[in-house]
Length: 471
Image (tube, rainbow, N blue to C red; front, side, top):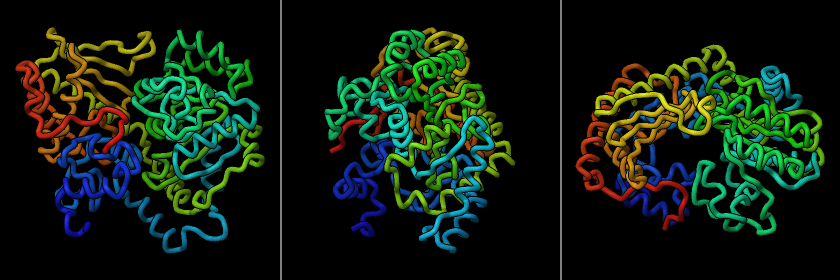
């Protein structure tokens, strides 16, 4: 069947849905998250740099997150590929253990001198679950406070057992805890990022009951140093394990993690995603007394011991440091933001910096562009993890706007979304093409919004804006 329909995108999507529930193992790769109705290419034949070829052989520039944020060196990096091919030829999984684990552990501990030990896995979600397990084992407590997105496992989705909207402010809205044991209700307590109110009313009051406070130190904005220092102090006073989830934000600004820039150190920290440029590997680093609980609690998996992940991660960390990649990614991020700002100006939008969330001192990485006609461009995130939103007085307009943007960018041969992560392979030529397309499409968006006819320009349904069941 696949061979007969592989070049018919709509038929292939429908067929895939019929034999693979949800079509993809990752919510963010479902075509409905970009362009529904058979418009999105969905499958690829090869990828190199920031170029992707679909099953028909058509070439696209990828200006989305580039491998869901994992391939900061671009697809098929020659140095990572060289190591991967060598390891595959020598046998990636055997009865014995890969020596690269020791080398990688040494590299991580040298960079993070607050940590004593390291554990490895292959995905971010399972690594965070491991961190929570160790914190619970160490403190002999069950409850956990969370801020941010930390995966799909039962311990995390239990947040929504008490209130189905508890996770709405933590990246994905609409997550139903279907299949999660009801006995886990009220074991997870959410709090808001950079919120002084939640610091007093949630964190201070609940910390003594909790095994851990787990949070992302950056995503839509950078964690306020004073906020993180306050949490660190509360965790110390209540003998609560502080965990920083660096799976998304690490290796962007430097060769370690965002918390190293801020000078606030956790008890445990998780890494993954970018650590081997797309080759599966994740790591947990932390203080010895907590990490040693891994000997007491059964935590084990065969594929955590394969050689490909650690070997490629060692090569990635070497190259990251040699290139000073963090500096490059920050500069690329600034260029991407400038493109959006200039595109907004040319579409008749006046530019001004503005604080968006919470106290102004916490949001120096956020900007907004406003018009006199209540049309504004908002920019979020640390530079290498930039995203934008074009807002109007009507909140229902944004899903239409971003669907139209993705649709029109695809016509220009560019895979795009509201997020554009920095990448080493974003050349000046590629950025110019992206800039030209953005300016053209922002003008169209502005024009059709004024005419109140943007929805009529869509060639299919509006994209999915969170999690919901796909039939």
